[in-house]
Image (cartoon, rainbow, N blue to C red):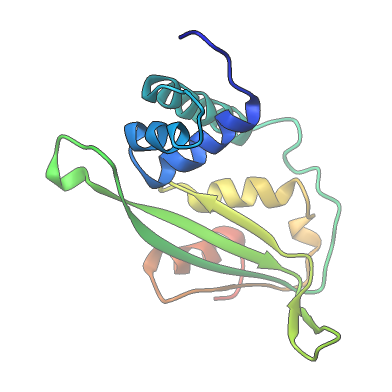
Length: 169
């Protein structure tokens, strides 16, 4: 119809498309009286991807982090994600790699452990550690951090991160 939708609808459409097909996402909106085509949702996903790609590129902000801490912990893991549509059977799944980065933990008022300054990082691609190091270098002076620990389930790509970041595994 050519009608415009709000930015919030576009954002929700991208989130829905991560969980279901573009057509199913459009049908979900129709249940709430919002008309948006599956082509529009596809375009929004492509635009979001281009934006993220530009954000992740090297910038003048790299290595500007000043925060130095005595302990920086990186918990890394990967999860296999099934793609919605793919012509080749072998390409139907990809690994989404994640990390939780924090500066230790403390006890909250209820006596439970609480992470100190947690950062959540999600990335899809083999250069996970390069992207994470670039991201962290915008916050931390990694050379000034006294101890960096990487933990994970024993996957080789996680162990390799210790060498890349000069951390303990």
